[in-house]
Amino acid sequence: MSNVVKIFDTTLRDGEQAPGCSMNVEEKLKVAHQLEKLGVNIIEAGFPIASEGDFNSVKLISKEIKKCEVAGLCRANIQDIDRAWEAIKYAKNPRIHTFIATSDIHLKHKLKKTRDEVLEIISQAVKHSARYTSNVEFSCEDATRTEIDFLCRAISIAIQSGATTINIPDTVGYTVPSEFGSIIRNLRENVDAINNVTISVHCHNDLGLAVANSLVAIKEGARQVECTINGLGERAGNASLEEIVMALKVRNDRNPFKTRIKTKQIYPTSRLVSNVTGVLVQPNKAIVGANAFAHEAGIHQDGVLKESITYEIMKPSEVGIPSNRIVLGKHSGRHAFKDKLTEFGYKLSDENFEIAFIKFKELCDKKKYVFDEDIEALINEEFVRSGDFYKLGSLECLSGTEKKPRATVKIIIDGSEKKVEEFGDGPIDSVFKAISKAVDVFPMLDSYSVASITGGMDAQAEVSVTIKDQGFLARGKGSSTDVIVASARAFVNALNNLRWRKNHPKITAPKGV
Image 1 (tube, rainbow, N blue to C red):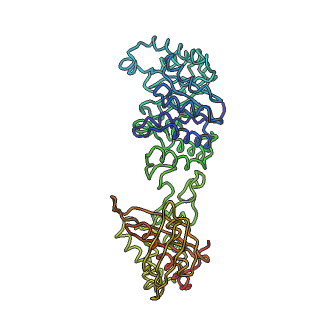
Image 2 (cartoon, rainbow, N blue to C red; image 1 turned 120 degrees about the vertical axis):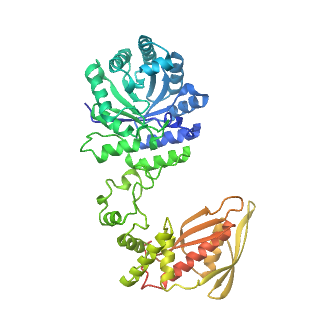
Image 3 (cartoon, rainbow, N blue to C red; image 1 turned 90 degrees about the horizontal axis):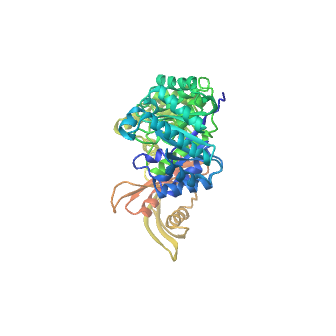
């Protein structure tokens, strides 16, 4: 048996069914292209009969995606199957995915049909699908609550009728790993011709066991896993693609299987899906959460800084995250604090470091989060730094659709006033150029960001900038109800920080560009 596991991504179908996760045609196409780049084997593009919009998005994805199979979901009836084929027939490798419930619970309360009636529906649906394509997947909805002998009969008929993939869904997230493994093993032992088809699993996360159930199914012979990016899906979601893939990769000693997923595309894909759906990834989410590679505890920080493998079982870069993150807080120790000071370019004597560390701990008791700017302010205020050398006097800015942006600034330099006018590509650019000309310092703008401190139309903006010059890095912040004024204040603040650093070589060390 092959050790290759196919990844069937259903973010665009089951993931989209989660409340608030609906996507329009353009958004679904954008995600589909990223899934292709990620390297999934099959993209379940949607449920074509559900709506005209879903039909059109599946059709468009089928036409544009070339490196993945494209599947359309349909109930086990002729109308659904015909509609699905109309949408996916343009794909390079189309797949019809048809399903019907097989548990007695569903037969009695939802379908109101007998077992024999369901078996006949399975036969007709799969045979009709096979007339369109040899790539037919059949799913026994609520398989894990289906009596095992009837499940075997249903699967046998599906295989005899032309199904090439048999999917065993844990539709309501009810099963546990030992039970699910036993179901897959039982099917392989008791269903004729089961070895001639691909066994697939589709696990929901209602008990938090979707990934664990998927992994045990792989161990028992499943060679396709149905999953979603960020674990999106109905109710508690589906098995998370990123967790399954990295579990197979990191613990290949226990799970000797492989996928064709390009793992460095995992984080970019996660971010795209989060942005498109508007559903934020929980901070403690495995693999892609904001805290997945973040460390605040001093013992952990010390270990990671010495050797990352002490507290990280995979490199952040393996999943497309540039680096880990040392979060400074009340649990942080001296090693992490010193490393952060080195990152900023500060080189303190042992005595001054101890003073700074005590001040840092006092700050941690007052603030929930200690940001980089807080550290810089602490060092600057404690050691030598006094009044600002540069101050913003006044600012005028002219800009519009028919006018080239122009800024006039009045800068006070060590008590003397200087007025300068400059043009730029935009109002902010013209302001920064005018200020640089006034102080005769022309740093590179490394980063620029704006955040709203308050809400409403009169919200106060807080601007953060980072500048580089001659190997030195400096940050600045400024706030105002006028974002251009806030930007000017932030830039002047950064210039003061830059000048202070250059003038105190005994306390600061140059930071490489």
